[in-house]
Length: 461
Ligand code: ATP
Ligand code: MG
Image (cartoon, rainbow, N blue to C red; front, top):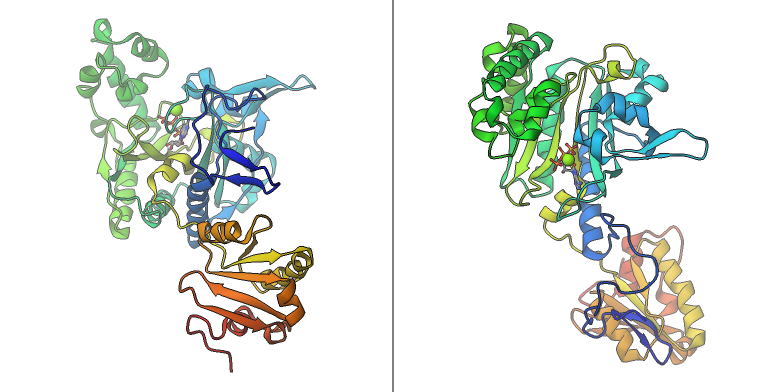
């Protein structure tokens, strides 16, 4: 028997947390199968937080006219290997890759963008370009689990594919900013913004960076030495203290921006300023892969310790080409649902308006009919099935219900129910013949007929 759940000897069924929960004595609560490391069973307040984040995202993406898409959880491994790039941590160390029974190499998606670009090509979505798409769901990365870092975690994702307009970058950033405001977590979050320029800019900057880092070969960390050949831009965001002074002294991109690239960045920042979105320039913020262009950004907080990035993205004009498609400019972002959920205020739990308490077997069937009527009218109801009256009243109290409806054999015989307000203690008897059951009657009228005379509620005209 689980320590947390006390099974009532009188057959009352599981009663969660009626007694102070005992802490498990060992590391495991049971000897049976265990949760896989880095996965989560999300329930209770954590589930409410998760759902509040997703609901806000769904509301905001509609305001910005983004279509919702549902994407496969797994793809051919090459979808990620070709697009995210073999040199990244995600592809080289973090992917869940396996051979399926047909011998094909399959990977659980570590992010959404690559799969969406695959669909853009394989499903002919190109004819609808530019496309504004939003999705959310689980993603998988084999990382070291810690606070805010899981192996199955969940992302919100927004992409605009098929346009090179800086207005698309602006729209995505304003959407992200509005989402964080609607979640009530904007205090302490900053939008860090950078440009990676166009191809000519990037080639010139990269050459200057390589020359700079070559001059400090002896002082760089081993990781950064390895990056010097493959991915020198990544040295800029190294966290190793040996690299920091060298990275900080490296040439910035601004001296290498072509006029076109400078114009693009100016258009993005002007759009953000016009929309009232605050940003700060971080010219060390980079994306390692060659197909990243122009805008790169992160919304960063100091409230989550080492896991400070809550939302990150940028323009990836070369990604669709890396999957074998035509040149397709695109921009997008992703955010960790768990990290956002940890930051928001605990959402108001959804409390039932009515808890039904049938006393006796005849009353139970009777209440099943009545509660179905209430729910069909749109009232949120629960039923306290078992236990003595006191226990069931406690359950209704604990659920923070507004009213209890008590119904026993005596009441049925008299053709009435007892309604008690848990807020005021007011109690009335209501004739069942007065409960309006006409299907054409709406929720408010219905509730007024039920509750007339209690808590000052007036009967409908
Ligand atoms: P980090 O630097 O924290 O590893 P990342 O650069 O790998 O992040 P992205 O690939 O940009 O992250 O993913 C977008 C967002 O997904 C991150 O900003 C973060 O909120 C969230 N995220 C990334 N990895 C994890 C994880 N293992 N567990 C929970 N959330 C994560
Ligand atoms: Mg990572």
